[in-house]
Image: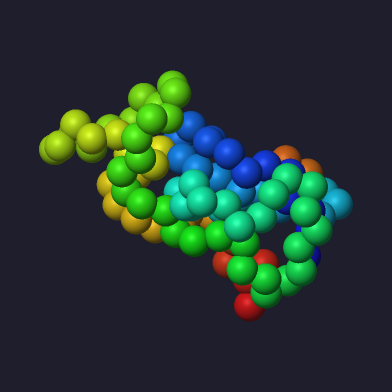
Length: 101
């Protein structure tokens, strides 16, 4: 559970949602740009906050990432659709597997 602190374009992370709870930040990268949560929304553990995004995204100002094979703009630094999750405690990245059950 926590509060959505970011839901926007995140450069290498593509479209990103960040949830914070005290000194813990969880980043969900390469998500769909059709957000189902909003900044400052309080969310609960287990709540669906987004969907995995598309590989290709168009019209993103400043997007420097593209598929080398096709030249199409990608959802951040990615080669395909997936969820990239990052856990930070006191702004230091930690292994998410140490915290997921």
